[in-house]
Amino acid sequence: MTNFRKLGRHAGHRISMLRTLVSQLVKHERIETTVTKAKEVRRLADNMIQLGKEYSDNYILLTKHDQGSLDSARRAAGFVRGDDVLHKIFTELAYRYKDRDGGYTRLLRTRIRVGDAAPMAYIEFIDRENELRQSNPATPQPPQRVPLDPWDKSRLMKQVAPPKEEKIFDSEL
Image (cartoon, rainbow, N blue to C red; front, side):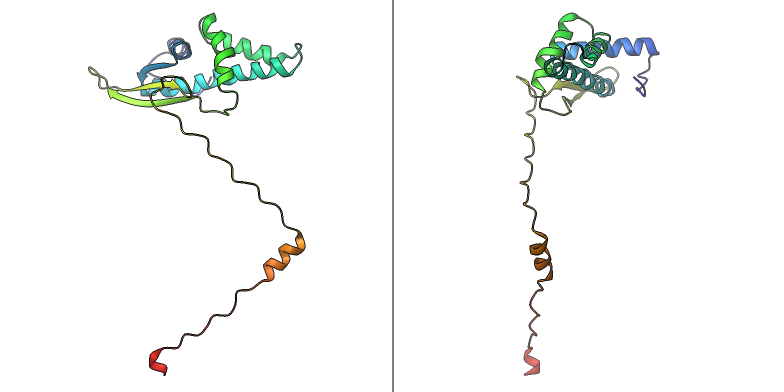
């Protein structure tokens, strides 16, 4: 947990605030906060979802003596607040994003807060019910081309375009 924005707070207060924001984001799946806080929460929330996915993958595929899954569970439990939040990360969210490689959250700028004119934003998980904006579908991969035989490839490379025809102008006639 390095290279955070300072957010005008000392280290203990900043980490405590970010832990609470991540826990509330997981619990409610959408929160409104300032843009700078939302950018920091996005990093940490994506990291928590990744830990949940690692735990789910290792728990299903590997033996119960594997330490990778236990480490993921302990790291997430040490950061988020509440057993219900921890359970949601490892069950619902890990299953929802099992095919996604990253980018689990979306940041939508909303308004300027009255009083201090701070820019506000919603941060929400994507691919959920009642989301503010639908996520873009995944771009399909182009079809794989069949590799050419080296002899066919060299023959195609040697083909040359026909010579250009000379244009005859009216002034030359």
